[in-house]
Length: 469
Image (cartoon, rainbow, N blue to C red; front, side, top):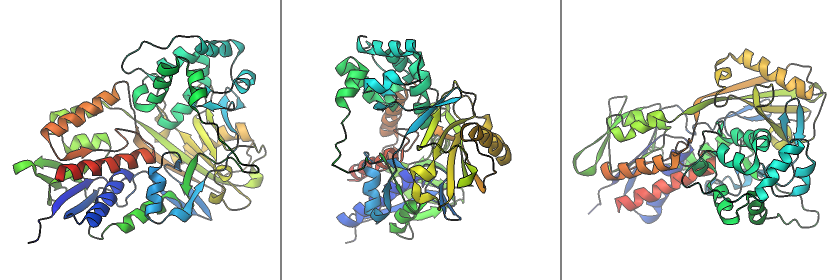
């Protein structure tokens, strides 16, 4: 007798939902479990913020451009879908911090702005003598008695002082989350720093002890910490999608709501009027969409208060001769103590040489962050002019770019404010009690990087399989 199929619906086709659908289907095939997977995506393509433009020999990422190599889930998935030969590490080189009008090399041995080597920190022009003395106080300060969550700003200011935070820690952390470090949650972003402080008392000494020293064989070059796909990250998304059964994916269709039916089953109501029955659901959409789908359940109301920042990436292609001041390195982040609109710039042709034809230059700049988002709403021409003015001050560029690609990401950077981890835990607990078989995942909850999202997709699959069995 044929066993009845268990139906799982994945809502949202970004990397989290796509990962979940892929591993669910793989598990069903390998174990012979009768599971039918449907992936529903409101847009007309999968991958969410992962979008690549191939133009005139350039490979240009509109959204994320790489992922951390030490977080293994992304490269493991790439190998799994046959992209192993396309994985490449970034070229290493000096990265800089722009403070006021000057580019300062990132002090050697600093991890997220925390010094692990004293000499580069003592000699850098990034901080005044008072700033350096204040940072050194970390070596004698007691560990904090703070229990529970606190802001990143509060934690780092207490350990290292305002100047190191403003000129180094803040530009680095804001570059990742486009957030306000005085509102961002330490426990949801970098809990390891709190643990290091609690275990070793001093953040500097703790990082020095716990940061592995890379061992290089003779003649071996230092490997970059990031990986990407030479044909563009969108080709990674396409490779995962190609592994799914053809009838799995439904694109261009929105989920209006989810209603609980008899015996812990669910009805997924689409904007086409169609309804899908589900035994279990993975919701991998941004938090505001999660809330609108489950608006009849008050436990999701807390997601209304979760902020998100708007940002834009601006890619500019130039002939090499346009750059009069060619700086050796891979890019820079910008301190808020500088009169610039851009928040960071990657010299993509140097960091990722495969992206750029010979004789050309590719610069990728970022605009928009918490408290400074209006720039994202300007026209392409206005943004292009602002970015070009900023770049010209630093690199002395006297030509217009061959072309510019502006990519706006409205409310796309979820902000993990103080207490985020606790709120997420409580929400997941409420869902388990009242809507068993429904699981939320994605960048709004437990990490925004590609590997973090892939990890959440994998974890959701585990939860679904346990629940269905």
